[in-house]
Image (cartoon, rainbow, N blue to C red; front, side):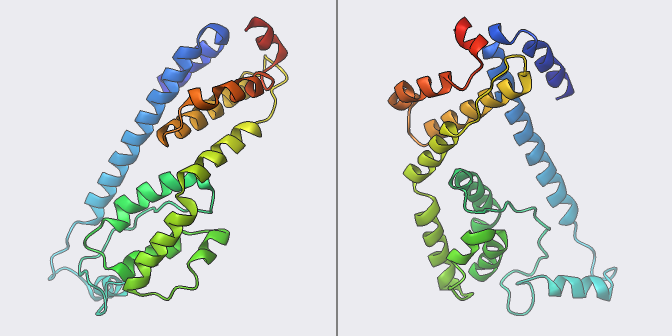
Length: 228
């Protein structure tokens, strides 16, 4: 990653001719981040799932296992779960897909958890006004499915997510100075990320490129516009 960062700085020095390399680099860095996250999660789970022999477990450890939410006499699972760094969701439509994919993998599809335990994790992951969406539902197995359906209906609508990405593109700040490489690269990364996200939702750039291109053209520095 340090090597790539160094190469990026070199590429940015010749920015006008190296757009493709910058895109490839950003995509490769994303893959590295995903691999590192996967390794960290696997290492943490392996370390925290080491079972202590009953003869060596002291009373405080036993009490801690019982005190874990949903792991007492009323819970369905008997093994203490590792402390997961769950993602949070604050109601931003653009973040819904990433949030739900992570939550579904760690919690929703975890067969060792009861619906009530999943509901507890879901509530703990919601922030701000989005938490009020399910506050009226009592903590029960039936209401967990209702809460998930309600959140998916409100925040998982592909068109609403696409609209959020388009709003982000429209509201990107104008970059005045072509020598401000950090601002130019940020603009490029934001456009790339939102266009890719829209494509993943089935909206091809060809469908809106005719409107987006003139808008983006006026957000880049005049010097770059003249070169184009």
